[in-house]
Image 1 (cartoon, rainbow, N blue to C red):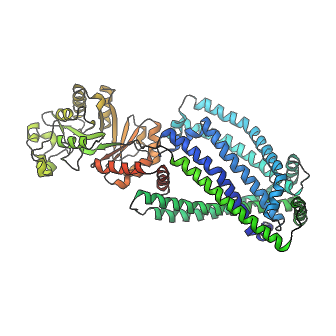
Image 2 (image 1 turned 45 degrees about the vertical axis):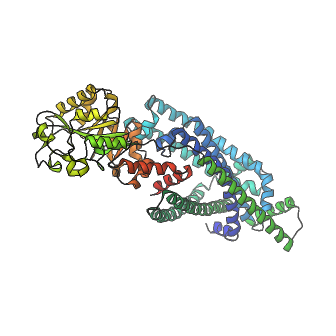
Amino acid sequence: MKLAWELARGSLLKLALFSLAFKVVNFILLAPLVSFIMRLFLQRWGRVSVGNFEIAHFLLSPIGLVAICCVGGIAIATLYLEIAGLMQIMLNPRFRWWSISGRYLNLYQKLLKLGGIQLSVLLAIALPFVGLVGLIYAMLWQGRDLNGLIILRPQEFWWGVGLAAVVVAVFVALGLFIVLRWILALPILLSESKLSPRQSLRKSRESSRNNLSTMSACLITWFLAHAFIATCVLAMTHLGLAKMLDVSWQTLSTAAFVTGVALSLQWLLGTILSIVGNIGFAAVVLALYHNVAREDIEVTGRRIFDEALVLERSSAVGSEENSTSLRLGWLFALISVVLVGIAIGVSYWICDTLVLRDRIQITAHRAGAAFAPENTIAAIQKAVADKSDWAEIDVQLTADNELVVMHDTDLARVGGGSKAVGNTTLAEIKSLDVGSLFSKDFVGERIPRFSELLRASQDQIRLNVELKPHGTSDTDALTRQVVDAIRQSGMTRQCRICSQSYACIQLAKTIEPEIEIGFIVATSLGDSTQLDVNFLMLSHSKITRQVVDRASARGIEIHAWTVNDPDLVLKLIDAGVQNIITDDTLKIKNQLKVIESLRPIERLLLRAKNGMN
């Protein structure tokens, strides 16, 4: 480790600038490619909210595998060239950057061949392991939906994962052992230019044969130290940026801009840590080469430098050399700025020409309780006027076995005292003026029968009917009467049924299979996504991307209730919900219009903001 520090210490600035130059080249190549890949799968789903299983589905597709190969291939190739250049600078700090570039013209083909041999060997070794994983898949997962297995994780999923993990662990251990035996091939190839890539690999194996424990200890120590420092720095930075992003900005566009700044700062810090990591790795490997191969760093560096001087064919010295260096440095910087600008512009154009539309439906809670008496004909008319997609209503039985649309199980909030609905007749309930309690504009508005509300809604708005049984005694009667009423009105396809009573909705599905059913999750000890339902109604505070992914894998929609704060809408959209239940349809719809008016790049930034919080 001491020698590694001595190798890097003398030319830290030059090493950092060289590594930064490679990061610039990497960005120029990768940014448009990554943006293009992002565009591909966003276009497939047509919205910003893309979950883990959707990403997995894309990456496992033919186009996704090609994308992985392209991005990974470019990243690995530039990393290889960067490490080689860093080693050359350490071997002789007198190198000018154009000397290294000139030497690369000779080494480029060897470096590519070296990497190609290593990758080919590892892939060949991987084939039988891939075959074993395929056999495990055929035995345990054949015919099952892969996305569903990943999200739902039944018993056979864990058996498959466990067996595959053993196979992968053996391959990883074998691969690391082989890579460790090859670790000196790059410095050998750089210092002994007459050797071929195959000869360099052979010499690396021979040199490391009796030194594997020492080499392993050095590399593991360096990796752990760098990982610990990087994790601490990034974690503290993330906390600080998360606090900055947690501020309620006046507009979503401002929030998107601030998010862009935060991501840029995070990227800059990540770049600095990557530069430090690459310099450290190159220094450690070079020090191992010196200790294990017993090579004289001074002699090796001088030899490489002399070769570079021949390639350079220049007699310019002193001030003329410095002047040339300065001019070429400025030229390189200018070209880099132009190319980075072009890469950013192309990436921006690729993402900003997307057509995204968040497919969110709005349900008027209690038929729209903000501007009309809840669960009334007037509320339904308001929900229709506000162009709500659905109206959620509550239905229960009276003492004389009639269906009324009413939320509470007693009459306290509607002026009828503490008497229970189940102990009150329809006539008594109809005598109550619920409109005057809400506003003078609704004087005379009454609690409707279910059949009345069905007629008012027919061909106007879809209904999400909540069944509110008073206990197990009226579960069967309530469910059957509601389903019969929906059938008689011809609104089977226009209605859904939900309840906090699982027995009610299961009975409804048995009676009428065409009706979609949903469970209202107030509190839950288990995984509610395992229920046999079409949709789940969850409090917005309980909704996460993971919950939505698990539900989507089983074909279950997630409906968020009760959302009256517009600032919650974007987070729920990015979580992937399909329906937002609200007392104020217009307020939520206006927020959706604001979100839809954002440019695609702003939506992507805000999606990242929600991921950082």
